[in-house]
Image 1 (cartoon, helix red, strand yellow):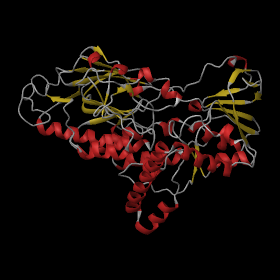
Image 2 (spheres, one colour; image 1 turned 60 degrees about the vertical axis):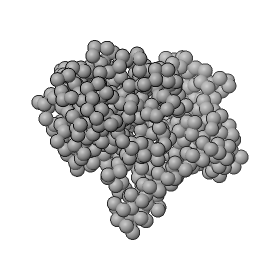
Image 3 (cartoon, one colour; image 1 turned 90 degrees about the vertical axis):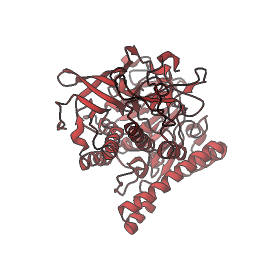
Image 4 (cartoon, one colour; image 1 turned 45 degrees about the vertical axis):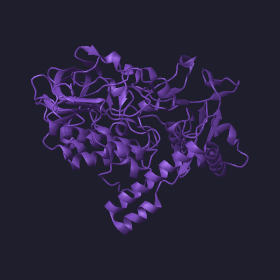
Length: 521
């Protein structure tokens, strides 16, 4: 995409890192709530869209309905509620163009580091042009990380024994070759997550046969690709009203399903198993391949539109094998059971390589920020790190539901600071002995592998990373932005401070000098 942004400006109020669904959303809210604020969106790649532009594997689609995955402010107008990447990408770029956000994006601009100066209340952000290697330093009062949670350069592939001896083609979905043709070939897809259950039916129509090789089964739910109620409401009520009602309906349904799974896991397991068995061939070994050893929603449930995975299995075009890889062979994969799977193509749908905050190296007043030693504040800031916000969505619902609320809260915080003359905000843990736990209570392998590289969360508000939409609406949209553990103040030489919680003038109550980084975790 052509870079139409003003590339001469080097000083901003806010810099947003990432031009995917989170970054475009952040740009919209900033522009709407703070039209006088200067901001730019820095994107390392040559195009916007993030995940939906990066991944090119067959069948790539959302695993959430687009009425909740889409933005609250822009209706999803397509008939398909579970849609492919091409439709999602068009929606994102249309949103950016409609609101002029596309002119704020600086493409091929990778952020490599950012250093905070308390004296200036500014971030110095080091960037590198990915096409020329040119380095530039930009400055901003606030830095907003909206770059997702994984490395774009490569996915995660385990170190399989004997891989070098394999004569076939080995592919990771994140780097799908444009010229890969699987017609008439035997394909093994290693994995059982969202990517695997998307790939298998997409490849099954052309490949000789597709085998999904999983170490552990996953809960898989069939959902209609089209939401008949939503489409009926659109015809009766028009786009705007129908979207609002459908969004509320789907949020309520998703939250109800999650709560039921949490409260009645055995009953939920039985319902999912019964649903799967009804779609699979008679006498199919459901318990072997579709009965996970953990409870529903301990890991994310996978969605298959119109049951496409089950239909591919029923037609004999695809199969599932539950086993472990012992090693690669010349012809395919030797399994620990002694069985060998012959394959012309092996696809390692084995997960993402988690990378927090876009891989940016942060420092505060010359001291490096170690993310694992910080605690997440309201799921959007880090202890001891001033004027830094980030966007990470839900793991048990649509990603964008959380991101929208975080952006709203961020803009409310900026307005509060403006009204009182503050230029600095830093979360500080009042109780250094507060117990902490992993940022995400989520059992997926790609998250578990990265726990030592992620911030922590506490055992009480405001240090919890909530996965409850209703609770977050209250906290992020309706409750005050102030908190005793959020220090608001002014940089040296600025106006006198005002107490963040009472509004009383006090030169010391709102001191925003960061606490020592190691003392905040």
